[in-house]
Length: 163
Image 1 (spheres, helix red, strand yellow):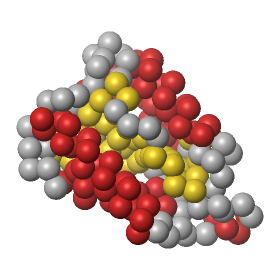
Image 2 (cartoon, helix red, strand yellow):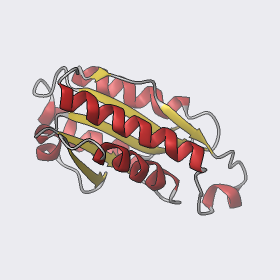
Image 3 (cartoon, one colour):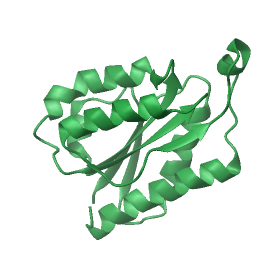
């Protein structure tokens, strides 16, 4: 049974809500195992064992979170040339546009020669003050539904072997 690996990091809860919704969507597909790991817990063996990936990060200073970067730093060379062609998508919980974080993930995935199967899903919280940035986030149901749909689409594609 193929595994969809969801690697995520969260500090204020927004990205976690997005990743959980995606995992719920993926779990709707009986032919796929969904595995959700915090970025600091995920390692090379987890990456190698998965058939597809969903990377979820907050936007920090127009970049992906440092903990997500650490995940990629720790796993990149161990997985290089061993996961080519596998599908991936990304999600960003952003205070502004999230584009910088999405571009960073796309560049790393391109180096791994992963296959992008969806545009980056960016949820903007519009948190712009120090207080708003540090505050716990509440992701709207409509945005969580978009995350569920992305998780379901990835899992369905894996189950059907179309990726």
